[in-house]
Length: 240
Image 1 (cartoon, one colour):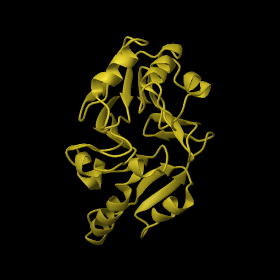
Image 2 (cartoon, one colour):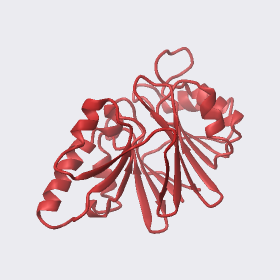
Image 3 (cartoon, rainbow, N blue to C red):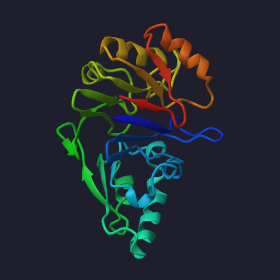
Image 4 (tube, rainbow, N blue to C red):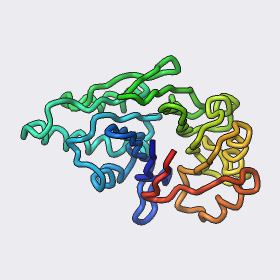
């Protein structure tokens, strides 16, 4: 299994950047995990849109779903021209309802509601969810293939559930939007590192980073707590 960063900024993109989006690949299967601003353009560096079968959304804030709104137009045009025949399967929370309703556009998406009880198997990749603490319904996502485990925090503040959910993950992709002392609905880089350490993760990649904060500041905070820390980079590939 491998994970490619299509976008790591939040809650808005910097110059030449994109917000949350990750391409998860295993053999002949691939899953788009979150679909923020600029992600669909970057996805097409790897696959044509008619190859997109599965999208998993951690939550429905704009910086994680903005490109769903333009993807629906592309899929509708492609369907009308016979380029695709099946809707894209989308697995996501049902709230906020106004955003969820926007996905119901000309049946280009086959919508599946997720919660903490949801267990998926998408062509051999096992997927489970854990509710996080954020202003809207949000889930951390775990993907497993054989003995390898990838965990994505989504957006959250500090909570013990994420420690147990990420336990011994080979790759932990974690929200680290803030630095110590900042207040709001996200983890600090230090908190992300603390969770990775307590969960005994093999590797931490900080993501959902603000364009207004230097990469060095994020890294310097986290590395003091968890040695095997990396900072998400555009188009970086993490092999699990």
